[in-house]
Length: 172
Image 1 (cartoon, one colour):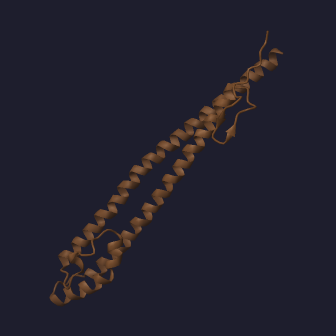
Image 2: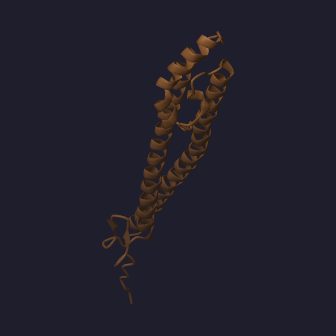
């Protein structure tokens, strides 16, 4: 007595309906493909985060360069006043990137040492984005590894299904 058993009668994987699939190997392959798609989409999201962090890091680099141009080398009283005026024009950009608006860097006089501290503060904030990107890159590598493993699993399942069909065709 032979009985047809449809294992996929009510199974749905992601957006793929498995109603007409009678092969466990093919069901497994489709589930692996769905997981691969999920890992790929997660990796794309992380790549967008890296791009955003790189853009932010470029903003820091540009601001640091602009501040270094303002600092000069003279530390006389007139140079301090001039430096403070020029730094005040960069205040909004500094505040946008994490420097407190009430900072002494934007007062009436800014010594060369204070200007260098401002640059160091911005460099420290910029380095945080580099560290974040390194962490995200590790996560991307993990996602891509999982993606590849899922594709290999799907390929293997399809190959097994084909082998079964070939064996049945030869036996028949």
